[in-house]
Image (cartoon, rainbow, N blue to C red):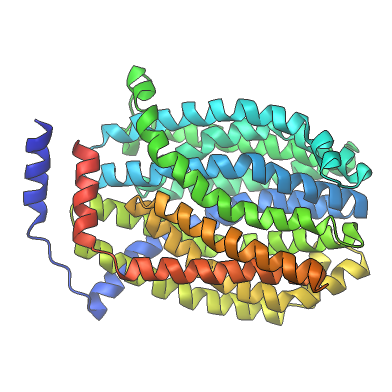
Length: 471
């Protein structure tokens, strides 16, 4: 029966034609924009939650800022990056299933992801409880380590919230239901700002208050999205009850989730390793604070191409699942043009504002001057990041997570980190040298992904997608 469904589906897709013309590009750009625009706002809103917390903590002093930056980096390395990366497996499974009109499978895959990510949170929590000892063991400053350990423990409830909200977002994204995510994210952010201020300053909890506020905000987002999925008629065809089928689907989910996590984590971890290495430089409080702020800034900027990448993943996976390879090719061309144009504009705007960026994070003159000198490098990194983020989104839509994992391993660990160590420690360029090394890894990664994408046989990818769904 499954073979019959696959044969019928392939026959229906045989007549698909999509010629790359200016009219077709404009039409596809509108479809991409419908998804990308709200997703950019969603990404900004969610990213602003830890950024605003960092800004408030930064006005408590250098120790509070450096310890919070250190804890944020390690929590990202050992927890949030894993969850976000594993959830990327749903962009392939849910996106292609929706394109093939196999709606029930979206709900099943989403439950499988929730169960898997929640179980992953348990060992991560024990790592966070031991974070103070781990930081002291690797040679970090004892005062910074103590404060960072307290912050990580208070952030554990937010970890479990992330394990639920990420699958919910991928489930909605696959169906292009982006407006509910937008409203939920903005509402959560508006709630988080006064909540964080009250916890940090009014109640006097300091940096631990910021961690508590993040956790509460994450769970509020879960509640908003859960209510929408439960009662919205738009989710009727994809909403299914929890059953043993979700448990049986864990293996299929993990087959894409694990390489998806590796692909994301290898890149994410390379930046966090840079932050940890900065703690071994002379004047570690200054170097750690400056590089953490630079990383937060570029992470905030990257939310624009991240929204475009989400649109690329959704459109490519939907079209491949529907058996329309030429439409998928048109999507790839459109999103690369859009992303390249957008990042040129954003990088130029950041460079113009280079003298005022530092004041948003700190009152320390040394920190502000160092950030100003780093802005030109951040601008170039932002352009590279924009391209590679969109290319990675295309990879997730196709199910190339395993390929991306190998690319990131070679680019950042054989190339980027090695160059960073050479420039930062042996040539004494310190924080600037570490950042230049990671930029070199990004150049290698972007070049390889570009070659892979341009040489792709889209007809073959559509066939693989149909086989994945129906068999």
